Image (tube, rainbow, N blue to C red; front, side, top):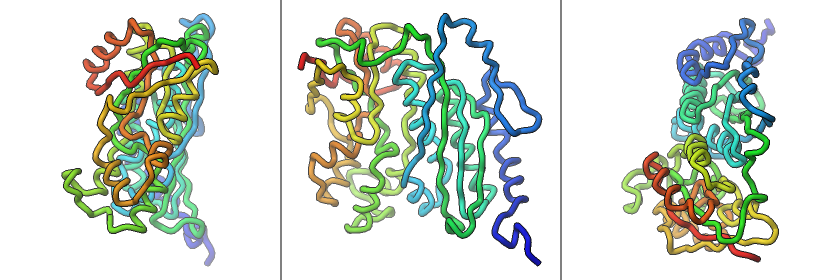
Amino acid sequence: MTSYEAAGVDIAAGERAVELMKSRVARSRRPEVVDDASGFAGLFDASAFLRYKRPLLATSTDGVGTKVDLARRLGVYDTVGHDLVGMVIDDLAVCGAEPLFMTDYIACGRVVPERIADIVGGIADACALAGCALVGGETAEHPGLLEPDEFDIAGAGTGVVEADDILGPDRVRAGDAVIAMASSGVHSNGYSLVRHILATTDLTLESRPDELGRSLGEELLTPTRIYAKDCLALTAAGGVHAYAHITGGGLAANLARSLPANTDAVIDRSSWEVPPLFRVLQAHGDVPQAEMDKTFNLGVGMAAIVAPDAADAALRLLAGRGVPSWILGEIVAR
């Protein structure tokens, strides 16, 4: 007899996954979240915007890319949710927006309730770190399109910023300081190159290079550092003109997006030591430096462009919040 389950879709497993994730999702709740008894939509009380003169909504969407393949191969599912939140929510922080809420989408070949609960639980935990609520999501089973253990995740986030307080290139001036905030690792960009190196060299996920002190797989699955609250605190302290989220394209390409046309950023490579993981990948993969520069963050996950007289205070604030930071360079006239 033909049935939906015979076609590969297990509704009961999906319902079980929802039950398993409920308590962890609740940890990300904000006071403005309003319950929707039907569960078809996430509700957010917009009266919170009354404190703004001219509130602008900011939105961002992203995924985790091929890093999910390494998570699948290692059977570790609770860290890629952090990567998703970092990719989505930290983009909102660049314009100065406070993150409000997020939704997620998971496509998989087969719903394994515990696996889905780990993925969504990681997203919810990271939302709590970022100060936003996970208000909804969708898990879709795609038998025949994806193998039973394959999955992909994506998400969208919404934030709010006062119109007069938007950060960006218009505020940047020659003489501004560029402050680097350390990444926690590769974050969630460049994993197609990582996987190529794994496929064509003697490196494996089980390799334990002396420089790392643990397996390469563990190092590569280190969750993305989430900067949203740190950026908001730094902005509130004053002197911040722009941010650059260092994702695909590397440091130069992403910094350029936050600069006015009449300026350049001069970066001092001697101001930081590239973390060992990047050196291991470069050496084993014989990757040219120019390719490393445009593919990976090389240890810098977020950059702040600040007024020169605010730089020291910014470094002290970030240090107090546990974010390693340093003067990366300066803005000069083109």
